[in-house]
Image (cartoon, rainbow, N blue to C red; front, side, top):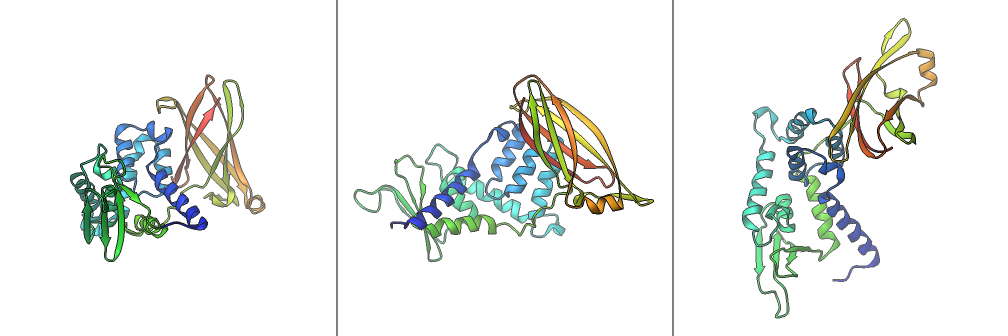
Length: 302
């Protein structure tokens, strides 16, 4: 089946999105083995926002993130069991058992991904010598009346999803989002942005901007007070920590001034010094008033 120009564009975007889900990055490589294994195993169900948050948080907070990640997906958390997590890992194990012809583990192959997201097909038809005399090994999986086709073009056991139609990829993408329980969009406890304002040899000036409308204040005698605790972790590109700093930044503002500043930011400027090179900078911002906390991670070239 030939795709029209419009459909071809949609197909390219869909395939790029699928490939991006499996791509590794420098940030992922800098994680410890346990964290990297978790991120790899949940690649089919983790949201983009969750992934970014996981990459930004300090190693000591990742266990709490993992516990929360699975708890949010438990269909009946009051029972203490998590059928979703159990079924997810059971499907990974089944995919590894079923798809052993290729060098790559079964759960990382296209057939494994589809099996994990959609479950066992209603009917699986295999053509190990191809459908036609000049064909290649082919499998057709049926989910009801809906077919999904895989072909082994290089005769090496690594069956690839054959995009017979754009609709197939679209349905797979939706399945990836819809198979899991409904996860509410995460709301950050503190909203802030980070940018590198300027750099000089051996020095950078980092700007942290917090919208006034997002700050939770304590009020006393018409004066609003907040204390921000900013922790900076400077790391090598391989994730090795160089040093950490922790500084308090008190803020006082009148109610009248706050009303004037609702569309503005409270800005904290932080100098960072190091030998010339490329680094990761992880920022943890906490409001001491209520303990709310958020994280960012940026690449820093000095």
